[in-house]
Structures are given as C-alpha cells and as structure tokens.
Length: 296
Image (cartoon, rainbow, N blue to C red; front, side):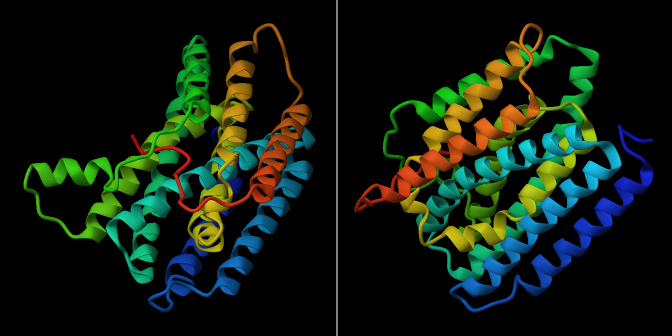
C-alpha cells in the first residue's frame, strides 16, 4: 500500500495516463493552422469522460461506493473549474494573437505543467492535513475567498495580460508564444490554489484526489477546442462555480460539527452546474466577451 492504494493501482493508472498523453500530444496534437478538427476533439473529450466513469466503476469494485462517489465529486469539481480556466486561456490567446497551431503548442505545455503542479500540490496538501488538522480551516478560508472573487462584480480586464506587461516594461524581448506559455503556467498555479483545496474538502484520500484531478486535467486541451466557439455563451457559469467553492469551503470549515454525505455533495455540485449552464445558454449572448475572472 502506498498513499492509500496498492502499488499496482498507482502503476496501472500512470501507464494509462502516459498512453493517453502520448495520443493527445503526438497524435491529436497535429492538425491544421486553425486547430484540430472539432469532431476529433469532441470524440476524444467524450472518450476521456467515459474512461473517468469506467475508473469510478473500478473504484466501486476495488474500494467501495463511497470512494467512487468521492472520485466523481472531485472529478466534477476539477472539470468544472477547468472550464473557468478556459475563459482566461481564450483571453490570453486572443491578446497574443496566436494561431491555431501556436494555441495547440501553448496548451500542450499548459497540460504538462498542470499535471506536475497538481501532483505536487495534492501530496503537499494531504501531508499538511495529516500533520496539522487546523490547515483545513486555512483551506476552507481560501475557498471562501476564491468564491468571493468569482461572485463579485467583474471589471473589464486589460487587453494584454499582466505578465506580458511586466516583461515589456523591463525590456525583455520574448515571442508571443513564449509569453503565452509562461502566462498559462502562472495562471494554472493560481487556479490550482483554488481547485486542490476544493477536492480535499471532499476527501483526504491521496489516490482519489490525485486520480480525479489528473483525469479531469487530461481533457483540458481538447475541451478548449470543443468549447472555443461557445465559451462566450457561458457567462453565468462562474457564478455557479463561486457557489460550489463557497459550499465546499463551508463544508471544510464545518466538518468538525456537520458531516455532509458525499452523495449529497455530488448532487449539489451537479445541480448547481446544470442550473447555471442552462441559464447561460438561454441568456442572449452579448456582443463582446468578458472573461469569468482575470489571471491576477
């Protein structure tokens, strides 16, 4: 047993992940300058979703239904917050004027960086929670602050991302692609601070937290190309994400006194996402897009 699961589980999971990464980066990563074909990335996104459900079924048989529900809750939270990331990525690519091929390259580096960052954050977070119980109150407070950032009135962001302005003021020459990659990695670091505590509010099991995050992040690149044409329609989704973060933050803070069943948590999360997604699609699309939140 290593971190709550047999060594064979960890090895098998990483073999599958490496195979999926190879297909995503080296097979699906190719395409025209306008980006990969919509049908291809749509099928890949659906395949990754099906694989996540199959993995949940495996957990039911191997570790019980409770672990599977925890995995699904973590997966849904991370996948939902990843959509919020895509708003920022869309703004970045538009600001830097990247072609479809350059967007693929930036997303490839962003995908690899996201996997490494989340692995580090997850095991550090679990270790802190096991050693210092009071850390869960810090994580809960971080989630409430993240919820407030999402729910507060938004102001129009600058045309050029802050990291690019910072480098330009210092006279550092860099290509638009390099600036986009650096900005994506820094942005994902900020998002990880929100998403990892959110999943840790559901469970402290390292295997469940890690696998749910990695499987959700694997679909980030393809999900961007699937939703690229309709991201501007999901302008109300960040309010739903704010409510979800507030819910899991309050759940973490009150865990000592109130225990919310995992099934209830999953139901609340899915219902909230469905309500605000439908409301966004029914709302008349604005002329100009404002990102859900800035990368600040």
